[in-house]
Image 1 (tube, each protein chain N blue to C red):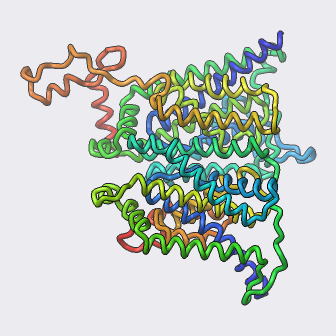
Image 2 (cartoon, each protein chain N blue to C red):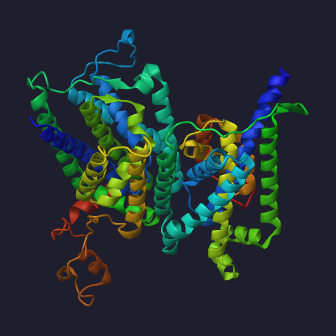
Length: 360
Length: 279
């Protein structure tokens, strides 16, 4: 196979995996407005656990030490990775989502990310320290008898299925009563609280759902690149994913995927082969400089991102004239309408909103 | 045994004084502008490398480097405010947006320094001198210099806040920008002045930090920011005197500082050294 094809295939696979990752962050920031600066830690936990569950037992004789090593097959291992990220989100959320203001919460998340990073690097016996783990088994390579040439397209297909499922799930979530409640929390916490929503549990649940997607994405990533160590998830990586989401469009999953294609893939990969000049770190550093400029320019000039969030709109024909009915009915008649113009079933959101209130 | 105790106490005093300068700077800025600045650590780094250029490239003494670092970091902080941050504050951007913007500034500053100087360890050409006894403590002349600078800075900040018009105006804006504006205070000027002062303090504490840790890389400030945050938070967010006290407690073991940061934010978000009614 020609090298160019291989290269494009690699880019496409990264694009698809980052698509999953950016959608996960979208559920944190775009849906619920959680200022999560430890996102890469969820990715890393998912990646580590997926790898540790899938790898055979460690061989201390050759200088590698890690826990688990259960030789699980791919899907259970990946599920384990996702669930591990959920556990981390649950712990972080229970500790700090309830009490802290958004900006203090974000500081705690950066600190937590740094602590986890330091632990992963120093704990040689846990995840092989700074050297990291390698040789993650390639799922289904033996079972389907795939060789090096045909494995790339197969894994790309596998990841695309994951992206499709995650996308459909995220879209369903966005338009569900839960998703609407989340966005009301994002827009105005007090109003949501006033309407009987439990802001804390709503946030906590979205934090866990986003972390699950991050963990799955991390598992896919580590399985693909075959090796993982702390230098792959420095806290600046979080801001690559943030830049992708903000540029693509918060709260818009197509925007999130577009951002994944533009920032971590096209931009980061396209600059990979630039020759280094002036100093050995020049290209790498310039990349982060551009990401910084991109973040600032995006929130300044196009805060909604390239693809803006699709707001519910109220078609004129459905608005009843105020003289016809009481004001109260007028508000009900102007009930939420999906972007394609179809009215939502009247009973469904009410029923589950009631359930929400009871639980809160 | 007592000797080692006093030795470590003395060392703790030095690190605490480094931290106190930085924590007071960030607390002043946060108190007046009311948003967290994640780029503050990289402003420290900027000062560190300004002094490095003066010290190594021009071959001048580290005290000249320190003066240049204070001046230039102050200027850069002021420029960052005017060019990048003010367009956002003019439009009343929410705090979370300001945080994302300062993340952008942090990435830019840190990586400009990385691109120019590379990631290798650097150090100043400076003689530490022979240690001598001061009471029960053992200090090198350099450490005594650091300690003296910290004390002078703290006194200066105290005089500024307590006795000058500018300091009183800063406290007023910190309490309530709207009321300050009604009282005829030009809040924009005050914010500019605060960035100049916070930048100067960042430059000063950056150089002192670099002297104290001896070797440094372009991430020296960013790694330090969480220690600064924990000192600030421990002392009570937005209270400069609390920040001074917080610095004495935290010193800097990054891991310890991070844990303190998280615990204080969770258990006592108003800080430990806050007077009633002054949170």
